[in-house]
Amino acid sequence: MLSIIQDAGWPIWPLILCSILALAFIGERAVKLKRSRVLTPGLVNEAIGASREAVPAPDMVSQLAQYSALGAVLASGWRAINSNPRCTPQEMRAAMESAGREVAHQLERYLPAIATIASAAPLMGLLGTVIGMIDIFGSQAPAGALTSGNPAQLAHGISTALYNTAFGLIVAIPALICWRYFRAKVDGYVLEMELSAERFARHLDRLCPGRGGSRGAAQ
Image (cartoon, rainbow, N blue to C red; front, side, top):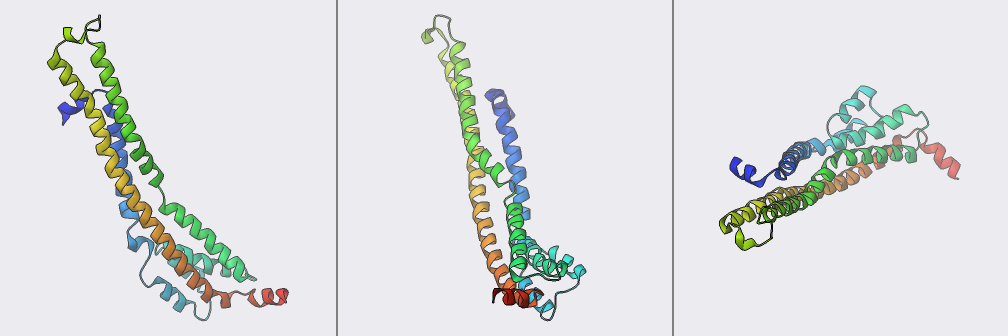
């Protein structure tokens, strides 16, 4: 492997850096996007049961927010009611929607970087190949007659230049697969969180202090 890297020349080093970054980003997302870290099973039912009569104290709200990404969204509804004595259902839902957008942004962390590596790696490999080919043909006879050069050396040079293209594809293909996998996973999580948050928001509607006032104002 070391001999291949040496033969490929300096253009392969940016690809090696991209491969290291891609592995780091993919490993980090694989850990952070575990289902237990995003959607704790039964959390909505527990939150509804804990707030059946009234919104819990702030310490329990903070505890819920630390459970998972879904817990942070649900806790934002409790927090909105606790912090505003005249909170309306609309204000509570707006707080949950804002928390949901923040959580979705956190779930998408590093996905653009993985997509960029997947797109750029083949081009970087092609650039290395072109640079290698330029060096090969530039090393031939000054008159430009390829027949005056060494055919074996020319063939070796071409295969060496192609190492860059091959390595670019080796980096890009797994990065593209992982990006599409994580992208689909995040989209599924966001949808499930939206459905769970809507169910929880309907439960909290009756606990909002400003619920009656908002209805009276509407009338």
